[in-house]
Image 1 (tube, rainbow, N blue to C red):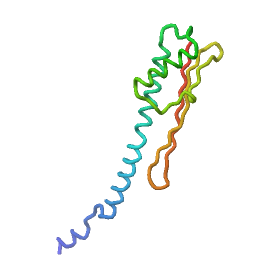
Image 2: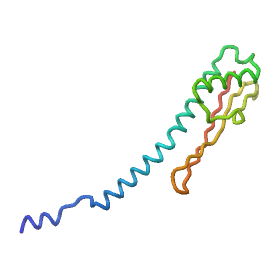
Image 3: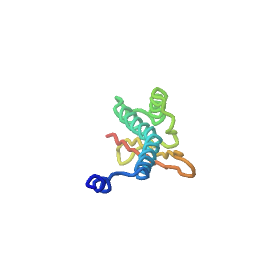
Length: 125
């Protein structure tokens, strides 16, 4: 009698509860795997723009020369997401500004997509 009473009071996760947790974890893992490359590219672009900004005598370079430097570094790193139409090179109140803004759309499944927007501005004195 004691043993039967003890068995009826056991608690824990049911099979259905376990399956729900597995589905949630699998969904989050799938979304993460699809989004991580876009974030990795973004941080590579940021690093690339920071390195371009550290180029000696960048203030004396023309916009075309700076753009060529960016394109060369993008090719070296095999970065293809950012288009030069998404890049702004110009002056703002005496500062040289290197800026990019772009969107990445990733298909998750069914009719679900994720849109990620990335922006970065580097100002050089």
